[in-house]
Structures are given as C-alpha cells and as structure tokens.
Length: 119
Image (cartoon, rainbow, N blue to C red; front, side):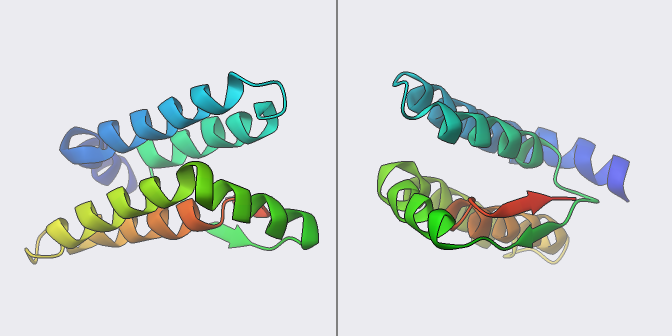
C-alpha cells in the first residue's frame, strides 16, 4: 500500500501540502535566526509529499515547547488548518479515509513539529 498510496497521495494533494511546507521553510530561512526552523520544515516537507509507511514519534523538553509555541504563531497554525481541512474533505468519501488519516497525521505534526522524529 505504501508505494501505491504515496503515488496517489502525491497526485491528489500531497504535492500542494509539501509545497506549503517548503514555502514556510524558505520564509523561515530568510532570517539567520530562523534557519534551524526552516531546515525542520524541509524535513517535514518530505513527509508531506510521501506520508504512507512513515510514523511520527513525539517527544522533547522545554526547548521544544518554546519553539513549538513560536512555530504555532508564525506558520504552524496555517499548515495545520490546511491539512485538517483537506483531511475532512478526504474523509467525506469512504475511499478517501486512508488519505484523510494521513492529512490528520500531518496536521498534528504541524501543531508540534519540534521534538518530533519521522521513522
């Protein structure tokens, strides 16, 4: 399911979500202070392009919490809303439920990406 799911996902919306993560990463990289955040966005853009067969582990400490709060204000909320809205649209059809679940996985990641790892 992974290879076929990723191919269909890319064509039906994964391309747009991945490009959104890349755009936010580029905006963060404009400032020197935001480069670490931008690099994290580029890592998660790969997940947004091809999410099937990958899992996300959440963790982190106080530093991750502070970065997640800044992230939420300066880009994360918009990405989470985008992924949740697309996920809701996918879940309106029985065939789209697996794709909707991937959208919700990305929406959760968009709310707290720091301290997270993709496996």
